[in-house]
Image 1 (cartoon, rainbow, N blue to C red):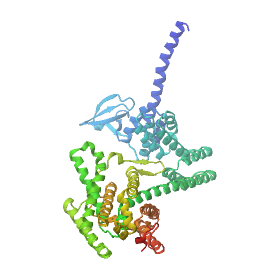
Image 2 (image 1 turned 90 degrees about the horizontal axis):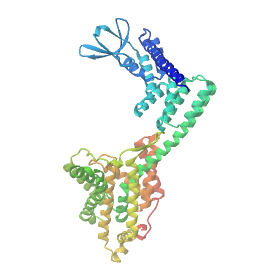
Image 3 (image 1 turned 180 degrees about the vertical axis):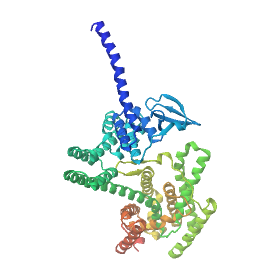
Image 4 (image 1 turned 90 degrees about the vertical axis):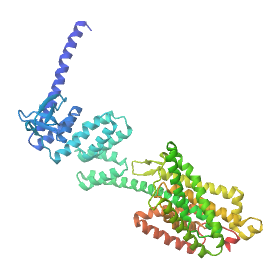
Length: 540
């Protein structure tokens, strides 16, 4: 290109671009001036036109109007944004924010708004802030657009979708786009396309949108019929996910029951002792966790996340030692007298509760959760899997696995099984049944203490903690089969899942009553539970 021609073109561009920009600013200023109209309908029309421009420069103007900071000067009806500074108001230009000087309150007239205009302003600001560089601002804007479902915001929304790089935000924008088309589009094809898009998202929010649209009945027969079909499909998928959630909650409850009952299954199965103080062993484990955490807070706050790792063996030792003391001090004198054993252990439970009240007080104690147990896995369909529940499920299975290893792979486990199957024969073979009884009772109590560590993460740590689980523990043991570990596992998870499926229908209390009645009827048919132990003593 000839240098002379290049110079001429550059001069023309330099002349045209400022003129074009000035024309755009003039058009924008004309729209802003429309906010000073006396009619609220004219103001709403001006807001819609400003929002449709997608220009971020109008955000401060609309924000000032929404917050009551947009005024007109009495000497000329010029629009300004005013901020009070002492006895005067500092005014700035609505577009650009240029300082226009100070005026007195009497020189200003506030631009009035009503509730309908406020709603329009919020929706417009939501659409304009879709283009914000801040992801949190864009997320709030998408929610505003989804709530407003205003067709005037579609150009800005589509522009934001084209720019959005965050997959989650883009999906949210697509949902807002489909919802807006469903409610505001004039063409039947656009509404049907919106329903197809919404059918891909089985969430409670989409179900609510479809319910609102079907109830409103604004659309052709074909669109309404398609909306009803989409609603049925979404509700079906949500019911499936709700079932998955109920199963998870049932497994979670079952893992808690398993931890509370597995120690009782050992002591009840081997010794035939109805230990009403078993819940207090759980309570001692929870309070041991509290003491360990207090020590970490005082002496090693940086290592607090390791407190539960230390609390598990500590709770086992504390509860196990108390269990051995109870067996050696009281229970060994009452073998063969089940009613007196029940009364004695019930009295011991009251003593332990009062002792804990005297030492720690009657109020609940705060047991913290380490960072690795905090938070949850949340799905868009509403399913929530908390980390503490997931850890407790895994922990309960590890505990059961450890018990099985002890019972099957150690000499103590062999002796314990021998005593369970035939105490007299084991005694005649040289097994010290008294020592086995003490260690078995201590092991069962120690496992209950470990259960207390887990329960401290999901329940209140108080002197009455164990009382909430003792009845359920006995139900699990009797239902699964007295003394049978695998029966306890199956019984705990079965009762947990059944409870969680019954609770939405019958309520928490009635669900437990129904489960208890079902177990009573089941025991009438199978007195030894699901998996009965076999042996001369057991079968006698």
